[in-house]
Image (cartoon, rainbow, N blue to C red; front, top):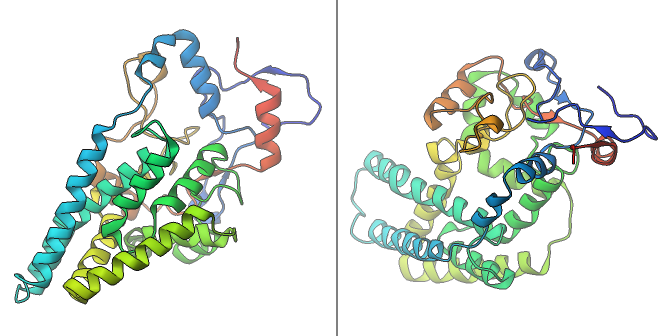
Length: 324
């Protein structure tokens, strides 16, 4: 269904669940993204749910106790880095890799969740406090992540699926190179964190003040860690992030959120108390299962995503409205 400029405003045909009318098609054969001619559905879905259940707003707010969890996790990783560089120098490499994956990878994936909450100002009320605590969470992560993630993640929410504007969409090079090869998909999932950063860089935007602060902070932090604990500690922290943002159950949400598994649905997994908005939607039940299915299923590949042009997104938002 294509939106035409100048058309009279009318009810969005996706109402009330805001599922698209498109089919999965044969993307894995054509190496093309699935296409939608309407805007991203989250804003309209939110309006419809709030119309029926305005009490949802009572659940809005901040959770500063998240900061306590964050500080605890930062301390865990720094202590692990200390052990790796001092007490565990002679540990078997295979065992050390397993420990890094199980502990370091898991903690690093939890950092990602907290950085996400900070990006939406859900930890503290003031933006400044969320930004500053993002720098704290970033301390054991080697690379500057927190401020760039906030910038690009908010753009993802605003322009979900809009080609050239949504930094969450795989690049054409990723699609062409990986295709539906299970082996290449395995390598791609393992390096997903790296590719996410590459996508942001490909947008060619100038770094913001806070991104510069984040980078300088990490240069200072990494210098201190290297000078006090050595390169072994820094390598442990870096490998933890690589593993935690790649082939790890804690990173499965990168695949779970918007990779297309069924017709018409571009976001997974919805579930909640307002049953009429959720019960008929497909949702995943296993983080490990998501990764396995994506890698092994030849019909799933990096191009199993929905895209729309900015013009279609804008016109769909203006011309197709949720009922009042």
